[in-house]
Image (cartoon, rainbow, N blue to C red; front, side):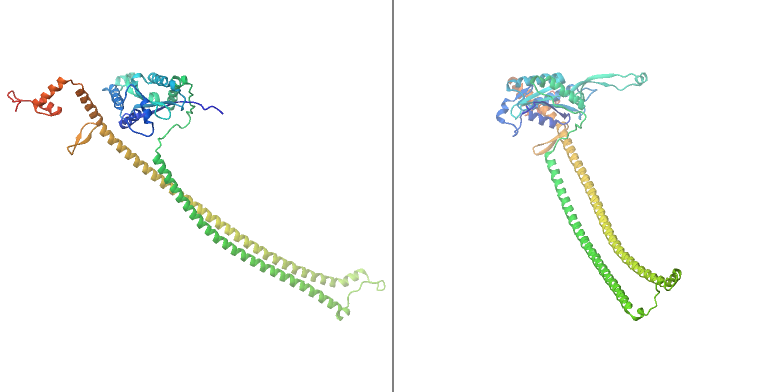
Length: 493
């Protein structure tokens, strides 16, 4: 039995800069900050974290890294790819347990060589799932050279100015299928080759576009398609039933025409038999009349031309002239008899041909009607199918547009809440805060860190200041402290 091949697997997912919710969700999955049935909680303790130990820390480092490249001349666009999530793994059981740490270390070193050490923010290794694998979060920042806007003098001289600065540039690594294939080759050379893992084959000429699958949507679409097919089958069965009834009516009508044709044929056969009988009777009657005439006295006493004898000494020419009238009369009668028979035979043949032509015309007419009805039915079914397909296509487009609009509205809502402003209830009343949840979180985290780093003397001094200005929180203290007062103002009032 052929041994199963073992492959090294490198996957990369792109996260847009504006999609902070997706980034946080992926980080929480990587650091196991939520409950899920897809992994074993007892083995989660064996997972390893590199550089950072929580999703919040990585999110903070991510924002600081993006902020570090933001200048007056360059502001990262919101729709740019801001974060890579790289998943590095292998075929199940391909990495021995004693070499797992070497695998993680070599992966980190290769990612640093490929993307830059500053861009590799954090990583985790998961040992609590079926196959051991690592997640790495990388910012695709690269020193990019851009051409500045040319002045008139530069346009005239054909020159230009350039500027090179760090920018979000995911196209440098994943801008085309060829670059993706080159990245896979680099990972195989730097990581998987040392562990005896193979690189999968790929065809750059094939269609490499993929869509994320939505299982519920696929099931709903499949159920809808099955329902439409069932209705179509019911409609086809009904049409077949109607077609069967129509064909049955045609069969009954054709049987009736066949019966009529058989009746005509039988009548013709009877007429023919009657004619044959009458002909036989006429022949018999003619023979009887001939025998009767031969026996009659008129025939016995008739003066028939006698053959010439030696005694009569009559010449042959005289005998010919004497019997010619009788011979001509017999020939004329015979010709009349044969003409009558020929005419009767011709009339019977014409009658038979007429009946055949009528039957053939009926058959052709029935075939033409059947073919015409068949073409009409096929054309009707094709038109119905085209109309149904067009309606289905319009309905699908309408549904997709509605889903796209809903997703866009939801993303705009979350973007506004995370980066622009949000509303919170204080004392049962909604209060609008003109900053995003992310900025508010960072501000509060900074304040909390400042409070945590204060020593006891500072807290006592701050408490005395609160008591001095008769306030109970930092915000009121800052306001009272900055308020201008006269020199004779009594602080003890």
